[in-house]
Image (cartoon, rainbow, N blue to C red):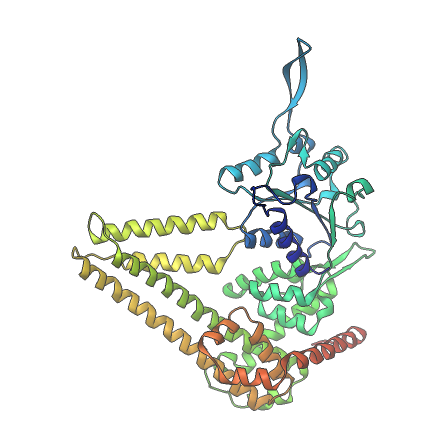
Length: 505
């Protein structure tokens, strides 16, 4: 199954296993709650979907890569304890609590009563630890200590063709788990990549070269490979390199995409992507200022270049949509704070009350961040901006109403700023439609453009909130879904021909 289907099944399992009857007992008793065993190639996203599912279901997560552990850290350290059997004292071996189980209990003590214990690389453990892992899957215990009720087991591993250290599970074990075989799936992964804000040039490249998304190829000099994890990590680096204006070449790309031919291809495309941005003046297109000769070049360009240009325009819009939506989120959060401040009463000056409320809001944001299973830079950025603005707006007047008016003046400036960003993004969207209409009409380029707007992380909600008549008209008249399917078929055929002839950009 693909990674999206696997994630949905994990979420369904969480709901089913943690469902209780009228007496408060779990509908499926712990002994019948089979652990999930995710088997799939490396870097496909197994760990990510477990974290996402836990976060979306609101349960805790304790994650361990078991190959980093010994039998002692997994089971606990042995010690001698005295017990009485048949009226006589006997010395027997006991075990301290496993480090892994201790982590689960720490989460329980912090308030996370239910959750997931995720064990990665479970079929690559050492010989001494293997029996412990089998016991763990079969009996849900480490040594003689059980996993607390309300905590599910999910384990993951690689098929033997990808890892020489893999140990096959016997039928006895497999008959006690729910095995899910996961495969790489580009269309599904792209949904995740868009939501995570993958570097636009990489998404554009994968539109043109879908066959290069995931490769694991044995070679005389060692295995060459490209994984989903590699694309995501490369994306993070490219964003920072772009901000610092640092150069990228194929050797840098090869550090993440460890397949020389693909790395060279990607590096060449990244260079062309930058050149297209400069040559066409994408920022100027989105400001309604078209350079001389740009239309002629666009209409004469090869299909690859046209799609890259559409991607560049979409990326420019995405930046503007994100800025507008983030500013609106900041404004809404500040408004709620001001409303609470105006309705509040308490001892001390307005400034003291303001600071007390701000400290409580900051503490709440820090608590949310602590319990968040996955990082969210945008959300953290919004919270940071809210704190900064509210700190700047701290009133100085001793009169409550006058203090409120002082703070409201700062809010008015922020609201105006957010409105201007929204107007700029809306106008840029209209200019983008103007350009694509004049350059390509209702061709495949318009299909790609409208489709990307439909699935974009920020474009779809931005348009839903602010409207765009041409988007709705084209989305209906072009029958985007069916046209997109035909375009995908053409791109895949082009990709096959590209492999056969080693076509360069």
